[in-house]
Amino acid sequence: MDLPADQRLLLALELSEGLPPHPGLGEPEQGYDEWFRAGVEEALADTSHGTPHNEVVADIAKVLRAAREARGLKASA
Image (cartoon, rainbow, N blue to C red):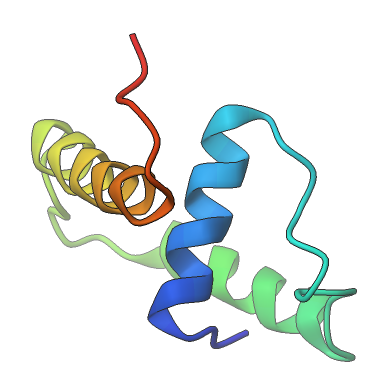
């Protein structure tokens, strides 16, 4: 499922804060489950080295910080 960048930021913030999903996102599109499962199977079969954990955490922190700033919220503890 492709979402615009602003909706991805809001969803990331809502998920990190334990909030219910944004009302505009609605139910998953038909075929989402199959798409998701295919992605999981592909990831499980991938033998490449991937991205180090600390880089992923830093990237997620940037996304969450940007989402909080966009909503005028303070950083979480």
